[in-house]
Length: 280
Image (cartoon, rainbow, N blue to C red; front, side):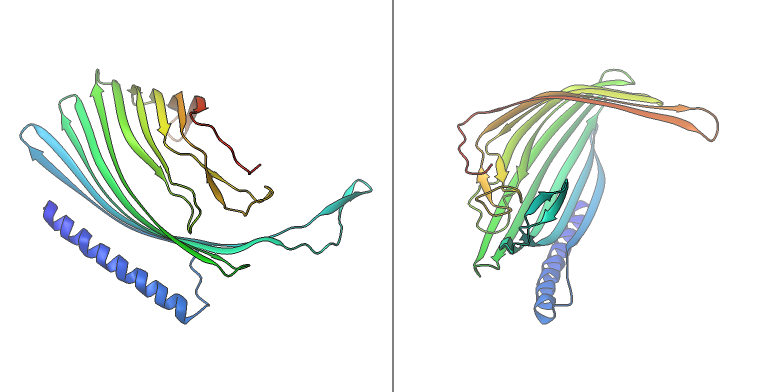
């Protein structure tokens, strides 16, 4: 059964790559077709029982394509009679460019249950191809990024309503398309806490800690001396905190329920390396 799902998934990957090539051909043939964002996903789940262990295997593939056309014009104003009035000065554009990313991701996870214990193990691989065209200078830049991100989680049921949990996960946020000079954001994330679940009330208290090898900083349209979207390496950062969440659903009558939700987050962060940036 699982082999059949795997074969079907691999066939889909091949078709997605062919579709990707076809999209590029259409883009070259006509300028009337504009793709802002496209996502194609496929998902397969299989239930297996091995001895006293129950496995739920999930296999998924996701193809994502998006792009942005930037044309940031600078305008200045004067304060005249308590109103903003354009000064009429024709200023050059701050940035005119086109950026695009194509990403193909594959993930596999196994949820293993035995008695009051539930273990979840998974892995994700993603291939990201980016390009940037600076229309002011005519320069074109290309980059490729890859990530292999495993995760592991465990949940122990103490009573019918109360459980404890813990997990460790690899996080990833890619640098922008093109040769930005910045490294991708990569982190190791830990969580641990308690969870309460009942018919009309659920609540959880989760502590978290994230260790970033690198934090990305980006130039904004309001920043000076940099191009919009330009990136820099922020260095190593540690983030920790606690989250509290509670939800309640109280029936008032046969047709009306009262729903409420409470959330609270406390966070502390600290840079672990010196940071010097020309951005504001």
